[in-house]
Length: 461
Image 1: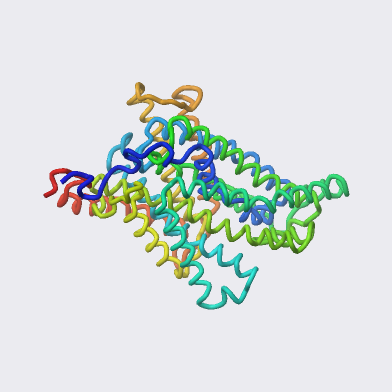
Image 2: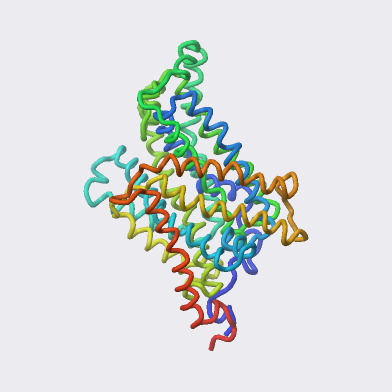
C-alpha cells in the first residue's frame, strides 16, 4: 500500500509555495513560541529591581538567545525536515538520542502547555469576572484548546498569519505605554527616574531573576519542527531566528525601561501589574487594552506551540516509534491525528494541581538544547560536506564555543533551583525522574515498533 493510499504522506509534499509559511509568518510564530509579549516579566523586576532587570534582559540574549538562534539557523537550513530538532539529533547521534530529544521536548510540553489557556482565563477574568467564575474558567480554557486545534488543522500558514495579526494587536497597547512612560520619565522628572532605576528591592534574588529571564528567552528551536511547511527554509530560518531574537529583546526591554523611568516602584510590579501601570500612566482604557492583550498572549502562545509540538509525534510515527495512526495527514499536509492527540493530552492537564515550575522546564528544555548543540558540532565533524546555506560564523571552534554560554546558564539556573519542590520531591529530582524515563520509553517504542513497519512502508498489506 502506498503512502497516498494509506492516507500517510510527508508534510508539505507537493504543496505549492503559496501554501507554506513565508518569512513574516515564520517570524510571527517564532515570536509566540518564545515570548508572546512582555507578560510574565514583572517578577524579574521584583527579584532584581529595574536596573539589574534591564541589564539581564540586555546581556542574557547575547549569551543565550544569540548562540541558540545561530545554532537553529544552521541546522534548520541544512536539515529542513519535519520534526526539526528530533531529526538533527537522530542524524548526528543516532536513533536513541534522537528519541531522547523528542521525549524531553514532549515531556516539557505537559508542564508548560496547560499554563497558556489558564493565562487566557486569568486575563479574561479581569475583564469579566463572572465569565470565568467556577467551572466556567475550565470551560474557557478548554475552548482555547479546541479553538487552537481547529486553527492548527488549517495549516502552518494559517497559524503563522494569525500570529502576525495577534503580534500587532497585542503589542499596540504597549506602544502607547512605552511612549507615555518615556515622556513622563525623560521629560517630567528624569533625575528621580534614574534614581528609581538604581533603587534596591525588598527581597532581592539574582538567581530567581536569572531563571525567570532564561525562561522568557527560551524556545528558539520550536519553529524548526515545521520545516517542510516553510517556504525556502534554507533562506528564511536564519533570518527569522535573528529578527525574532531582536524583536523579543526589544519588546521586553522597552516596556520595562518606560515604566521604570516613569516612576512606577519596582515593588509594585508583580504578575499582572502591566494593567495597573497602564492605568496609572494613561488611563482605564489602556489598562483594558493591556488586559485584552493578555488573553491574546495565552491563546497565541498555545496556538504557536501546538504547531511545533504536534510535529514531533508525527516524525516519531514516521520512524516507527509511535503508532502509524499519528502519521496521518489531511489533504493540506497537516498531521491531524498528532494535533488531536496532543490537544487531548493538554486538555487533560488543565485541571492538574501542579504549578508550572521554571526549574522543571529548565531541566528538560536545557537537556534537549544541549543535545542540539552537540548535534551541531558532531555534524560539523562527521559531515563537513553537508550543504549549509547558513553557518554559525567562525568555523567549528566557534560552533563548539556557541554552546558554552547556554550550558553555563543552565547549570547556574539548576543550582539556583536546588531548594524548589514538587510535593515531597525536590523539583530537580522530579524533573530528573521524568528525563530518565526516556530510555525506558525508547525501549518500549522499539519493542512495539518492531511489530509493525514504519509509517508509509509500502510492504504493509
